[in-house]
Amino acid sequence: MKQPERIEEQYRDTAAGWSVEQYADSAAYLRHRAELVVSLGPRLEPGDRVLDLACGDGGLAEHLDGFEYLGVDANPAMVAAARLSGVDAVEADLNEYEPAEPVAATTLFRAVYYARDRGSFFRHVATYTKKKLVFDLSPRRYRLGELRAELREAGFDRVELRPFLVPQTKALPAPLQRVLVALEPTPLGRAALRYRFTYVCAASRTPTAAAWLSGS
Image (cartoon, rainbow, N blue to C red; front, side, top):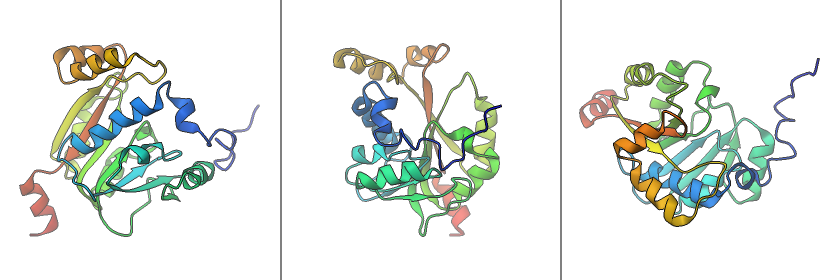
């Protein structure tokens, strides 16, 4: 029986150029992801600090120009690849990592399943995230009601969902891709999720809840 690879060995030969290999049109895919990180839920302001958990090679950083970006990944090869690209990244387990100071937004893409216990993970993130947690999920794999309840228990009483209709493995002509993005907030966008694509979720606190949690 083949033994599982140690984390030091996973992605050792593929970390460099990971984003380019993973997405048929990495620029379009990551650019739109970054747009939603900024705009979905409470809007980020220039200079805000963004913590990107499970950051891979840090490809998202390029599309968050004007924001302070920090990537975290448990795989040393990914962290090395990110740093080689000039990205600020650290090696750590997303379940345990805590930044030296609070961040405006925490992101987690294609990796929510790495949370050993989602409820505990959400509560941990809430302790250092001031504005919002942004992550993606497949509605065909996860029950939205359960996720909303877990987020609420963590203090995130406001949840906004938006379909993400940029294909991962197929590059589309720019005009067609613009049409799909325009459809995201419509019933047609939500209908597409029955078959493929994912939601991007922005979990935040209403001002009243945020003030209560901070003790002010």
